[in-house]
Amino acid sequence: MRVPPASCTPGDSRMFTIEVSHASGGIVRRSLKQMLVTYSSLSATLQLIRNSGARVLRITPHQQANNSPSTPSVAVTETPSPKAKDHGQVPVNLYKPKDPFLGTVLDNYSLLADGAIGRVNHITFDLSGGNLHYVEGQSIGIIPDGEDANGKPHKLRLYSIASTRHGDNLEGSTVSLCVRQLEYKNEGGEQIYGVCSSFLCDIEPGAKVKITGPVGKEMLLPPDEDANVIMLATGTGIAPMRAYLRRMFEPGEQGKNPEYKFKGKAWLFMGVPKTPNLLYEDDFSRYLSDYPENFRYTKAISREQENPSGGRMYIQDRVTEHADEIFALIEDPKTHVYMCGLRGMEPGIDEAMTAAAAKSGQDWSTLRPALKKADRWHVETY
Image (cartoon, rainbow, N blue to C red; front, side):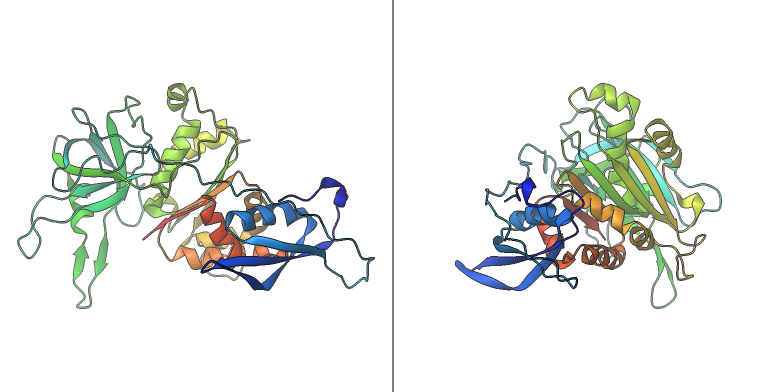
């Protein structure tokens, strides 16, 4: 569906009402909700509606308060919905829990600066001698040594991969993780540490580790060199984002990827409690310096910065601050959004996008699932 360019002139501020129908149980049911959109967002909205599987019944000019003259209905031509990209060739479950790959720890070091809260390590495993390969955005499983309280082997835990398919050594023979040691107090006030996260943070180079996977197709990076990539991360949710950014901007990676030269816009939102908790900061600062036209970096440091209400600055506050810009990018069909980290970030981000969508006369509760169906909204939270 597209609106003929001649129907409106550049800068046209008129509004249009879109009537939509949805298929339900094989029967077409007319939607009770009508969407009011500006001309500037009309094309993108129609694209999202089409991707959601809905059908546009009618587009008519909205009679505004200034009683502007009526305009004929905009002609609509329906075209088939584009299919989400095929991820069929992505490696999945090459190694399973009953027969894991035995990797060797090559490196294990802290990612935090002095004064940081908690413990976060970068851990690299040697994959030589096996067939464990992966792509950016996937995860691997780690089975920690030892047994649980019932005397059974520990179950695997999944971790997002923080390296590109070529590994940190650019030889395609390693995989790296960004791991935060889980730490909390139970109801009795006892300090509890995560089994697998502690195992990984404490492990020494040379040790053997049982690895499964890879798994996951939710967070895969689009192959389009002109794509816009918005990344929303908290804490170790930075792991897949680090892989994306290395693939886009790391000089060694660029030499390994003659078929992929990123030309779009990459915008990273990073949320941490304190400045010393910022992860991979030197690399991101370098990308910002070397690729100012392609990379943007926005930080939310909760214990050091205030939001407009005087409270702590969280990532959702930064999204609210830049919601209009983000939404304008989302209206471009080449834009993908990736969210990884604490599940608590989702409601605030949805609230910010709801407000931004409303300014364009759109309904975020309709647009978000449409983006998801179009394979442009990617979420991995915990």
